[in-house]
Length: 239
Image (cartoon, rainbow, N blue to C red; front, side, top):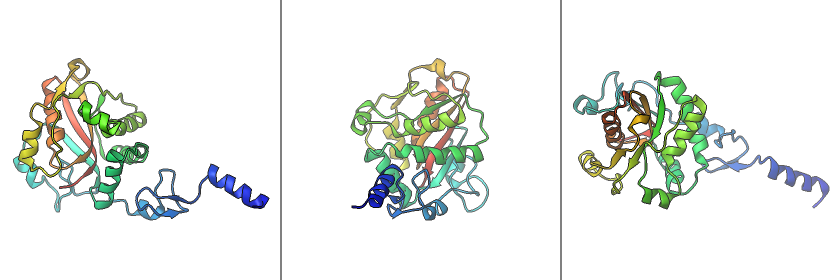
């Protein structure tokens, strides 16, 4: 190997130009500082109006969605950043179950941008949806807490990861109906430090809003503990 080739190899290690996009997994040269290629960045499935003003899910026409017309959610309002497409589902799956915790930087940045553009909320504290201690030991981290930290760092709001705990080990929510999810979550959450949320507006963070059962149960116990309002902000939403 000549001197030029050695120099190029060293520069490629220090400043990689041909790395894989976190979404399409293709090795290309136009990766941005968030690890996404230009094509994927342009095609990012960002949610745009019309959306339900209560749960934040996309709707065909302006106005409240059919679910929210019949369900009384405890939270004030929910907003999600992305459609839960197969590509986004796979990315979140890698983040949660593949131990790829560094993805929180990119996913958190997308949440920051959406929060600044779409969430006209005054919040006092950020609370992530907690994992049961057994599940958190299995995964190594709470994905919602990592997203909450990224958001809190950018918008300057304190993140409290200790105020809300998951005291009941529940079966996974995936595959359950809305009613089954609600039953599964009964008695699952507890507020350990009511003084941390009393008379405050709480921003509740989770990765995916599906039926809303998890964030609604969390909202209920936070309000019972004295929170003034609870807003919900999630990375993706899907049915």
